[in-house]
Figure 1: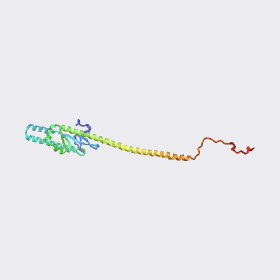
Figure 2: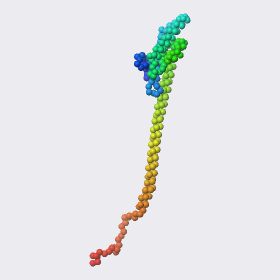
Figure 3: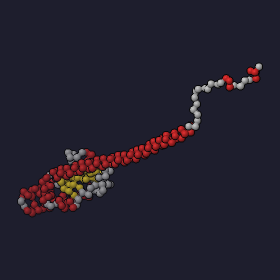
Figure 4: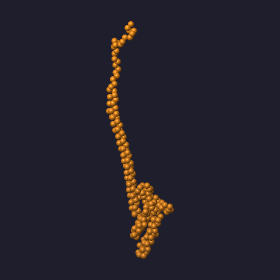
Length: 230
């Protein structure tokens, strides 16, 4: 598991059921699609090496009764393990509705398949995995992480573009208002120049122009004062 997943993607020896002291060996943290949390996928290993070796010995003996009894005891041990995992570690919505029972030998996994236990255990929300099967499951989970990361990044990009579009629309609206106000101001200036200037010009037309030249005074036209007659 450590080769397939990063340390942040799973917990070791953790309680997946609120209020329980039972700790599952591995709990993979599957992110929820909304990105606001995660749920656990419990994985617990079971061996029952004694039952498995007994089954192998029965095959070597060639005794049909012995083989039949050994298969029965092995199947019962696997069913019991599956029930234990279901009871101790599955707790919706904190966990997935199913868990994984890991067996460490491919031969043991093959015997579970030969005993037609897979479908039965799947109906009870338990998936059995040997070493190779677990790698395949982890590969699928890794793809899920990647797909979810891409989806989350796409949503982030979409939200960013949405914000940019909103701000651009606001900018465009504001710019349009400013342009409209500028157009009105320009028209007002043109109106002022055309109408008020003409009005002022008409008002000044009747006023005589004042110059710096002073007219000469004819001395003969000035009346004599009394003392001048003397």
